[in-house]
Length: 331
Length: 82
Image 1 (cartoon, rainbow over the protein chains, first blue to last red):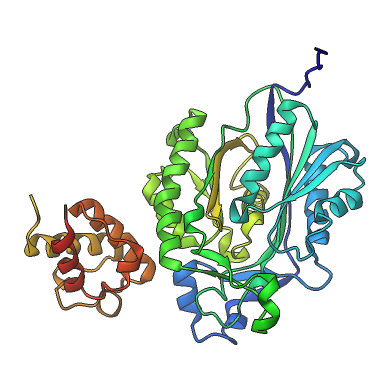
Image 2: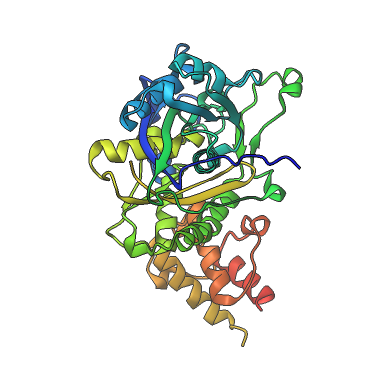
């Protein structure tokens, strides 16, 4: 039998750089209140959200991704030509083929980097990060670009008072590359397809013509809240344990920015010490699904609330239901 | 040993006090969680999960919407507690 030469990767992987793009249009709650019977106070008390960004026609999924990725590549101190793979997580790019990742890889000026899209809802960043780590350690790419990007305003029912205020648009990207030390812990991830009805697109694309209403994301608020807080707190704890990190050793907590009430309740359930910096980007960014964790990470580092080298717990969770949690060293 | 009605109301009062900051004496059988006790739909989930732990009872999502008053919750726990 012929002997196949094994691939050669790095012993470990780390996040080397992060970048974000927030659309220029800032949308306050007052605009949301034009189409639903609610109040600014009600929206803030139920979600913590004050403003969100909505993309204009030029701020496409690809364009926002290229902007965020350019910053992540510069932050990592590499060039686009060194990127070996581009992984894009999105649920709001409405052309399935070809994958938008290929257009992004081309526009960035990569050297024919492998490029593909994944669909893992609000856990998409963690899923992409896990794939990237595997590629770097296995050796199929030295540097991997992971992008979470959404235009959820396109999938928002502005007349649904339970969800109209929740969603926003944006892109977040990280560069994952080789490391001499472990800097991305084991991923605790999974899916619970039996709960697929709790967060979903209202109708399939094939049925949208007959309804006359563009599909939107809908959810069962109480069921999602219970799962997100109490089940995801267990997953977050498992990720800490898997990485051998205690809550006292943690510097930063970056949960998916779904709703500040979920974040508050998770922090309480996890009994995180006061010393842990908690990402609350949802207040001014809304829920941007796969983009929320890298966007929140970028903002914490930009404002100085977190610093390079900090140990952060990241956890994404959402439609599927799917989830992914891991401990990382911040770039 | 199964909790009595009085013990359940007292337990719910502690939980509502902890989660919504409502004085324990305000938590009475006829009080509505949302209208009288400032427990919104998300806080109600926290109340339910805390009650599940305290009274060894399972309260599925589909039953939570039927628990409008402290009396509804107390009757549900009395009937279903482990």
